[in-house]
Image 1 (cartoon, rainbow, N blue to C red):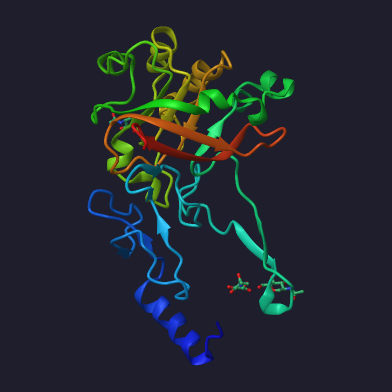
Image 2 (cartoon, rainbow, N blue to C red):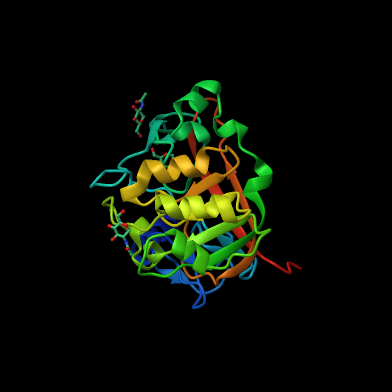
Length: 280
Ligand SMILES: *[C@@H]1O[C@H](CO)[C@@H](O)[C@H](O)[C@H]1NC(C)=O
Ligand SMILES: *[C@@H]1O[C@H](CO)[C@@H](O)[C@H](O)[C@H]1NC(C)=O
Ligand SMILES: *[C@@H]1O[C@H](CO)[C@@H](O)[C@H](O)[C@H]1NC(C)=O
């Protein structure tokens, strides 16, 4: 169909005015990005050129628990967020056949994964990069659990959660989610994470192999390296950090996490989703 130019202009204008970044949300799962939303998953028509952005798919069964990469998201140690990470060296606007972007990102950024080489230099040298991580750990039944909001993740807190033996994947939702820290540009050292004794308790007393958390590090800032050391020593535990766990009921899901297969990298951005059990 050929669309007249004035119509295109109108569409573009209304897009900018009414719906800067449209997304789909409902009252049960509001858009965590606080963006103007539409109320259903239906497209408003084939020719309207309005991209739909969602946090939830499949009528509430699939949750995207990955943060959207944007210049305003927090970056480790920085006040001003990540900043520009996408460039468009070839664009159709200036004569290229297609648009081809380039990106430059820290590997431990947004929703991401840590490989053992992150805090152990001899593992790094030996090649324990993200390409060596076990996809079976990253995919399977997972528990989303709320932790007490008034403490970091100490041994006492871990014990109080009564996570049954046999549970292999746990996503810990903390005060970080309530404080919307991943939506704040400035890096905040007061985030909640594992203290060394909490990490040790988990290693000694549970079968957990996937540890997920809702800010940039599983380890509290005060125990940054010690907690990482405890988790990554055995090379059996995988850390997924910066998860988006807003507005999802605690409970058992199936998690699917897939990172980039980068040779030599001790970290990688990762895409994670949760799927409700009893999928039909
Ligand atoms: C094409 O445009 C992009 C910006 O859209 C610019 O970065 C790039 O240098 C331009 N390339 C040429 C060959 O003019
Ligand atoms: C191509 O790149 C330009 C930026 O130079 C962008 O505004 C435009 O939307 C892109 N076109 C397509 C078809 O993606
Ligand atoms: C957790 O630890 C950080 C330091 O790593 C501290 O700033 C923060 O207040 C602690 N949070 C709670 C809830 O105790």
